[in-house]
Each structure stands twice: as structure tokens, then as C-alpha cells.
Amino acid sequence: MDAEREGLRILLTADTVGGVWPFAMELSSQLTQLGDRVLLVAMGREPDAGQRCEATSIYGLELHARPYKLAWMHEPWDELEAARQWLHELADAFIPDVVHLNDLAHGDSEWQSPVLMTAHSCVCSWWQGVHGEPAPREWNRYRTQVAGNLRSVDRVIAPTWAMLKVLQHHYGALPSAEVIHNGRSAFPHAATGKEPLVLGAGRLWDRAKNLHALAAVAPRLPWPVYLAGDVRDPQGNETALAHARVLGLLSASEVQQWMQRAAIYALPARYEPFGLSALEAAQCGCALVLGDIPSLREVWGSAAIFVDPGDPAALEAAINLLINDDALRMNMARRAQARARRYTPSAMALRYRNAYLDLITRRRTASDRVRSQPVPVTAGAHA
Image (cartoon, rainbow, N blue to C red; front, side, top):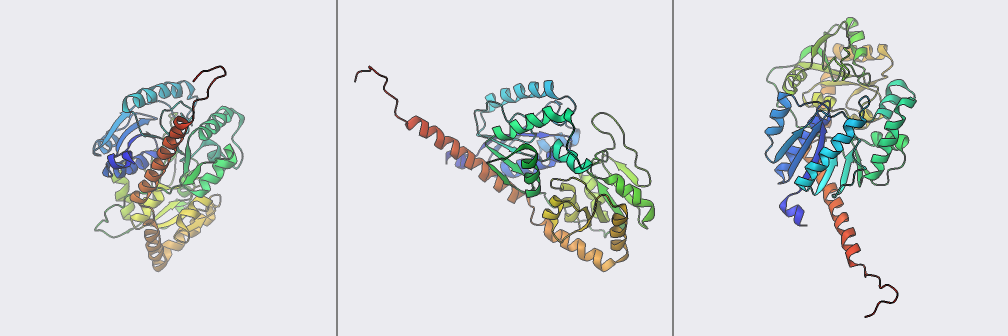
């Protein structure tokens, strides 16, 4: 295929708020090393200085960013429409071989290229995971829009089979869908050894991460508990977390340093479609204590200790078990680190690139088939 030999032109969307950004950075870095060009279109909020620096360090990536709301944010509809027009202006100038969307919006646009959409998370599955019940009626428009977008694209990707299952539960059958696990570059190992501390990281305001449960059991643990992440939600509300030592929003390198120090990483999540932070912690040699949910079971198997997210006593017992048993803690850390080697950026990028090429081939085959159809002769026409 000509595009494969010459390199692909990929329009890739991302948000600057959560785990989609490191996903986009890893994928873009791998694709550009393969000779592809990536037009990265970021929304959600303005990229910070660290994010811009990260993007500009990738040769072959061109970043465009505007703080348009994402589909899951409060009343995003006008800004989603403005973002749609902006995306099409960029696409008309860039002429991508494939469009890769990473927000559950814009799939129903009239794209001139094949479209792939990765469903990193969604409000309906988040609400079910956090509250144990369907999302309320005020999310009906979101539900309808997301279902239409998922069914309009050429392929849907989920980061785990568990996530794909809940997508189909909430939005209906997705005939062209597959699972591609996320990948993360392993951090260089620190020269210093592990310290007696427990770390949790993520959006501290997000009830899905359940890090308030970790903060609640902190006074009953012999080791200090540190929490890294933003305490302020997109509406500006701040989450108070007593007892734990809140580090606030850190850069990626700062989080890495804490993971290299921590002996135990805890994420008692109620909802987590993949869990990049757990992967990063495992790469840094942490023993893992995770919420017992299908997606985390799928990713980590027997390489983590799992606890009921709604049982603080079980969380406390699991962490104390690792604290009090050095051999078990080190064994679980080794198992997590070994399991983490499955989830590499190169493996992830090759799967995505194969999906791109397949969609491009299908689109060209369909176009060739249409062009090869004989032109019907109308009644009364003469040779």
C-alpha cells in the first residue's frame, strides 16, 4: 500500500484533562518513529507548559489546541459544535489518511477519511460503576449522542474487554469493535530503594478513583499515605481529603519520582477502564492494591491484591498485609513489574497502525468497487 510505504497522515484528537493525554503522547511518539505524521488536536483546557513541551519534543507531531468542552462536561453542546467545525477546517488542510477520535464526539461528522474512535471511558459506565445505578435522565442527550457517534465510525476500540462489554450494554451492539490494551513507556529505575510509604494517584475529585477511601484508612496504617492529583474538578469545586498527605497536581516526572519511592501503590477504584497509573506504578516496582473490578482483574490477573471498593476494612487489611510481610510485598512487586511488560507502547501502536491500514484498505476497496460498477443505460438511450 502506498500510504504504508510513505507514512500515514493521522488526525488524532486528545484531551488535556486526564489519561488520554499520556495515551496520545505514547501513540504519537511511536507512530512518528514509524514515519507517520500526526496532527494532534487537543481540547478540554489549554495545555500546560509541560504538555506543550512534551508535544513539541515529538518530531513529526503538530499540535493544535483550544479549550473546547469535552462530551462528558456540563452542557458542552455549543462548544462541541464549534469544535466540530474547527476539526473539519484542520482536516481539510491536513487531508488525513485516517481520523482517530479520543472523545466520544464528532464520530457522526461527514469525514472524508475512515474514522476510528477509542472509548477510553464514558459517563454512563462511570455512573453505573460509581453509583451502582443507571445515569439519571439529565444524561439522556449525552447517551443518545454517544450511541450515535459510536455507531457512525468505522471502528470502535476499547482499552479492555471489560470496557467493550459495558459500552455495548449502555449503547447497543457495536459490529466493528476490537480491544487494544494501552501501553506505557517504562520509567528508568531509580538508584535508591523503596521507602515505607503508600501512594495513590489520579484525579482526587473523581469518585471513580475512590482515593477518598484510601485517605480514610490512612490513620490506621503504620506507613504514611500520600495522594498525588488534582483536588479541583472542572467546575472549580475542591475535594477535601483529611488524614492523607495531599501532594496536589504534579508533573509526570514528579509522579514518577514518588512511584519510584513508594513500596505500595493503592488504587481501590470503583471504575477504571484500564488504569494507566497502576501500570506506571508497577513499572516502578510498586506492589499493587487495586479495586476488584473486571477491567483491573483483566489487566493484572494474579499480579495484584484486589479489594472490594466498598469495603474500607478490606482495603486496610490488604495494605497492612503487604506492610507486615516483606517477602510477600517484594514478590507482589516483582509480579506486577513482570506483568507490566505486556503493555508496551510499541505493541499498542502496531495494533492501532494495523487498524488504520485495514480501514484505509476497506475504504479504497469500497471506492474501487463503486467505480467499477457499470453505468446503467437509461431507457431510450442509443449506442
